[in-house]
Amino acid sequence: MKSFAYTRAADLESAVQLLSKTPNAKLLGGGTNLVDLMRENIEQPDALVDVTGLPLDRIEERPDGGLVIGATVRNTAVASHPVVRDRYPLLAQAVVFGASGQIRNMATVAGNLMQRTRCLYFYDHAARCNKRVPGAGCDAIGGFNRMHAILGASDSCIATHPSDMCVALAALDAKVNVVGPSGERAIAFGDFHSLPGDTPHIETDLQPGELITGVEIPPLSFARRSLYRKVRDRASYAFALVSVAAALEVDDGKVRNIRLALGGVAHKPWRATEAERVLAGANAGAESFRQAAEAELAPARGLAHNEFKIELAKRTIVGVLSELAGG
Image 1 (spheres, one colour):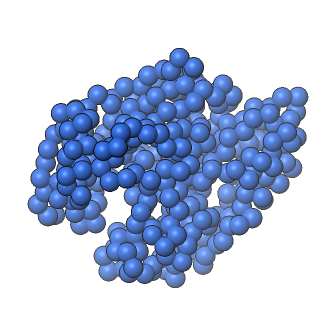
Image 2: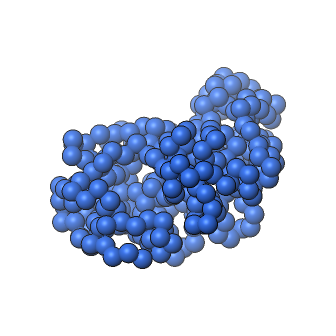
C-alpha cells in the first residue's frame, strides 16, 4: 500500500476544499470497500479525507412524508429505522441482504452508493480490465462471466454493480444530494450511476470536488407493500445473481402503481421502466407479470456462462410481483 495523507474534515466546506485541492483524494466513511481496494493496490489515493465527523449521520422525516438519509448513516441504522421498516420495507430488506451484521455496522449510505464492482477480473492485476486500467481491454468478456451483465453492457465492460441498497433506492425514485465547489445539487438516482460505454472507469455523475451529503426518498404510500428478493449462490454473504426490488399497488384487480428495479444484471441498478410501462393499468396477474418481464428482458444478451440469468430474472420478477399481488 502506498503512502497517503490523512485529514479529518471539520465541516462540509473544508471537506470540499480538501477534496478539490488533491485530485486523487478519496473520502473515508466506513471504509469497508475502499480499504479493501487500497490493500489490493487498485485504489491508490494520495490523500484520505475522513468524513465520519460531519453532521451527516441522521435520518430525518420530511413534512411531505418523505425521508432524508444522511451520507454517513450506517447501514444498520437504515435497516432498523422504524420509518424505513414501515414505509419502505424493501429498503430495509435490501440492506439486510447486502452484507453481514459486522459490515452493516461499519458501512455507510454514501459508501454503498460508491461501491465498485466485484468483477474478479477487476481485482486480478494479471487480467486486462478497462475499469481498472482504461484502454487495457476486458478479459471477462471471453472469460468466466457467470456473474456478469446481461443488460446495458458494452464491448469495453460487462461488470455489474454490487449494491443491494441501490436497487431499492432506484425503485423508490430516490435522489442523491451532493455538494461541491459550485454548490449543492440533487441527482435523480437513475442518473447517478453510469452505463459502461467506452469509459467504464467513470462510474457516477459526481464531478471533481463533489461529495454525497445524503439520499432523499419521496413519499410513496404504496411502498408499504413492497419486497426485495435476492437470488444468490448461497444464503450467506454472496452477491446477487439477480435481485428484484418492487412496490405494487393493486386496485380492483388492476395495477394502479408500480415501481420495479433489478440488481445483478447491469453496470448500474437497473430501473425496469419497460416492465412498469407494460403493467400500468394491466391485470395484476401472473400472465401480465410475465409479459412485463419478457418486455424488460427483451434486449438482454447472455454470454457463455450467464445466459441463465435472463430466464432467472424473468421468473424472479413474476414471483415477486405475484407475492405482492397476493397470488
